[in-house]
Image 1 (cartoon, rainbow, N blue to C red):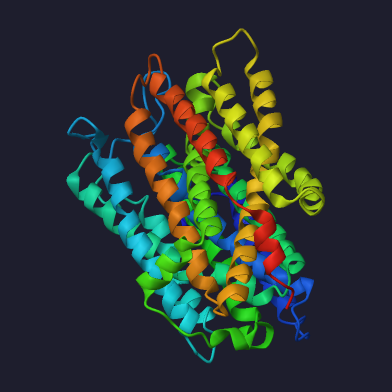
Image 2 (tube, rainbow, N blue to C red; image 1 turned 135 degrees about the vertical axis):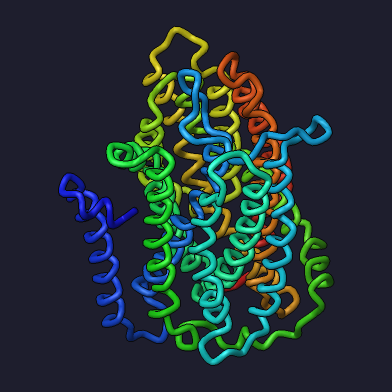
Length: 490
C-alpha cells in the first residue's frame, strides 16, 4: 500500500511527509545521545521522558478514540464509509456484541496493570526496574494498535469479532507493560512536588500533542482518499501513527539511564501481597476519593473524544474533516491555559482548580446536548463549546498525575514504603474502567436514531453531564491540605 503511494508521482507529498517524519525522529535520537551528563535529572531529561508520553499517546489514540467510529461509523447521506465488519447484535436487549467485547477487555487490562506494577516495584534488573517492562511491552503495543483495525474478513463475520477481541486484549496487556512502569518513573525522577508538577506539565503537553496528531486522522484520511478507498486511507493513517509512536516510545528507554537518575533507595521495599497492597491503598480516604472521581472524569471525557466526529457530522451537519480542525483549535487553547493553570495551582491549590474544571465540564456537556437545535451557525456553536471546554481539558491534563504523585509521597511519609508503580497502576486501572464503561454505554446509545433523530448521540451528552456532577461530588471529599502538609521534599 505504501509502495503504491510512493511510486505514484502524484503522491510525492505523502512520500515527503513520511520521510520528513523519519528524519525528525532520527535527529531527536542523535541529539538525545549527546546531551546527558547530570546525576540529578535536568529539564532536558524530563523532556526526553515526556517524549515517551507523546509516543504512547499517539499509539493508543485510534484504539481509544476511533474503535466506535470504525466499527459503527456515522451515517452520512444514507450510507457509511466503512463496511459493517461486526454485526450490531443486541444481547438481552441491553448491550451490543461490540460493547460486550470492549467491556470484557477490562479484565486482562486490569490484571496486567497490577501484575506489572507489583513486578516493577520489586524488580532489580540491571537495565532498570521500569525500563525492563517498557521494553517488553513496546513492540506488541505498537503492532496490536494496528491489528485492531485490520479485520480479516471484508464483510460482517463472527471471525472479525474474535479477531477484534484478541487484538484488543493484546493491545491492553502490552499497553499496561509500557505505561505502568512509565508512570512510576514520574516519582522516581521527580524529587519534590515542584519537580513532579514540572514533569506532569511536560507529559501533559506531549500527551496533548499526541492527541492532536492522532485527531488529524480524519484530515489525513480525507487527503489519502484521493488515491485509495476510505477504508485503506484510515488504515494507512493508523499504521503511520503506530510507527512514529513506536520510535518516540523508544526514547526514554534508550536515552535515560534509570539507575543514574532515579532514587535507588526506593527500590528496596517491604513487599506485601498484591491484594493486600491494593486494600491498604483504598483504606486511605484521600486516595479512594481521588481515584474514584478520576474514574468518573474519564467516563465523561471519553465521551467527547469518541463522539466528537458524531457531534460534527450528525448534529451540526458539517464535513467529517472538520473534526480534526476542531480538535486542533481546542488543543491550542488548552496549551495557552497551561501557564495560568501552573500559576493558579500554586496560588489557590490544585483542588479548587479541579472543582472549577468539573463545573465547566458539566456545562460543556449541556451545550453539546443542544448542538444543532437552535438557529445559530455551526461555527458559532462550536466556538462557544470550545471556549468553555479548553480550561477543564488543560486542568485535567496536568493536575491529576501531579496530585497522584503527591499522594504517593504522602503515603511514603506515613508508612515508609514506596510503591509508585502500584499506585499509578490503580489509577490507570480505574481510569480505564471509566473508559471501558463509557465505550460500553456509547456502543449501546449511538445506534439509537442514527440517520433520523440522533437521539442516542444526544443522550451521550446527558450521561457525561451526570458523570461530571458525580465526579465533582466525589472529588470534594479529597483533603488536599492533609496530603501536602504530610509530605516533604527529598
